[in-house]
Each structure stands twice: as structure tokens, then as C-alpha cells.
Image (cartoon, rainbow, N blue to C red; front, top):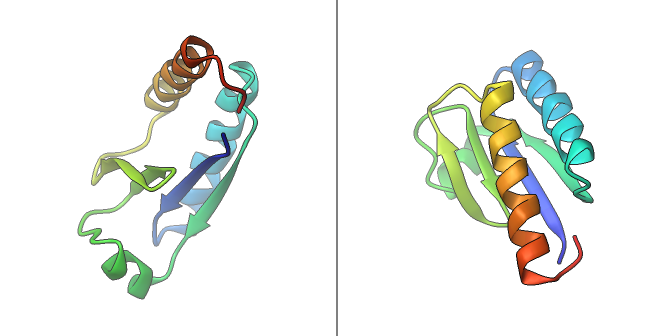
Amino acid sequence: MKIVFRIFDNDASRAQRTELMLYENMKANQIDGNVSQVACIQEFGRQGIVYLPALELNGIMLSQGELLTGSMLADICARLAYAIKKMGISS
């Protein structure tokens, strides 16, 4: 299973910090995947995003309009790692 997170944000510095925190949490939970930043207003509209920042995992919107904190990202990655292990698949 390929893990792909997308960070939607028009604040480049905040998106960069979020990406770094997400990669750190993915590494800590042994999750192999990719993270990308989306800053295009047109793409926000195509995805139906109204409030920034937003976080998507494999096409599923996890958060919108809520600051993506380190603890929130740690929780998401811990839950994802548990689900991957429980399902017996590799990321």
C-alpha cells in the first residue's frame, strides 16, 4: 500500500514545517510514504477545500481548517501504523 499525504496550505513556511513534522512522525512509526505540499488555489477548489490548512491521506481528507500540530500528526501516524500492522500490509 502506498502512503501519500498531501498538505494543502497557502502559507509556504507553515506547510514546510508541517511536512517536516509529518516525515519525523512517519519515520518514528516506521511508515514509508510520501508527503507533498499543494499551494495552488485552483487545486484547493478542485478538492473542495474551503478552510486551510488541510491534510489528505490517500485521497481521504483528514483535517481542514485546523492547525496541524505535532501532537495531531503524531496521533495520525500512530493510528496509521497500527492500522497497517493490524491489516498485515506493508506501507
